Image (cartoon, rainbow, N blue to C red; front, side):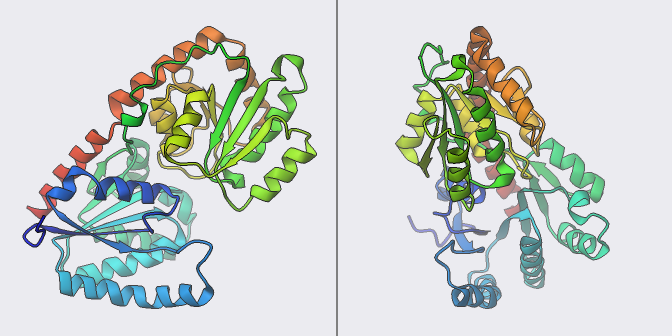
Length: 368
């Protein structure tokens, strides 16, 4: 297809193959049907991962503004779509990108995928408040993932041009799933995510170690899929608590391997206290008819209703997590009911077609 006559959208974000929510979102947008109507140009920001040397990092930081400026002047995009999260490094980077966009009179979409809400993040720091307000006052649209985020941002700065577009997933891999019957002898609790403390994975292993001391929970298995900085420490913890037979580390999984894991999952444990947006793992859990045990962090309460699609617990609450797991295991009828509710919710609200439609309308509005 000749894209020379199509409107151009310069879209920023991390490496497409990176394991992150923003990368997942970028792949969805760039491979969507919208890509037949506009010419997307991906401008990579952020690190290259563990293999990036200090010299490579320095080169990237120094040259990124130069290349971005070149893209703006040479390609003359009709729209710039900046994908970000509420953290200090992103804010400094994005404020400069927005400054360059304003010089070249570009229309800007600023999409925040997660991180602390502005009032909590700034914590009385006036310089940081000014930086965030500069960003928010110099964009054409602010995309947030939830109405919760919209209320928080509106409280921080009034009259913002906010559009709420929740995350979505491709539901086709889950089309053949059906509500779970829970007739297996083994009980499979699944954790899918980054292996770091603020995701609640330490508390999850502790809860399993407590439960398996009782004979009726001896067949409980915790299947951990993912990688991260705490993997070695978590393996040591599982060894120290004598849970190696029940806690199984699978490493990073993708594609059919991940779908197969959702097939055997009885419930999904995700007791995060990281400032989440709307985690893709939560949406996949719903689509696979897998009840969720999680926390009321970020946009999660807009996706999960307590007792309907899963169970809410307090962050860092090992006892509460233990009670939630045992409660689900011991109530077969409730598990089946929640499983049915999960699938209905995913297919009603979180399909990729809805997200494509919202972004198509937004792009048309701003490009004209």
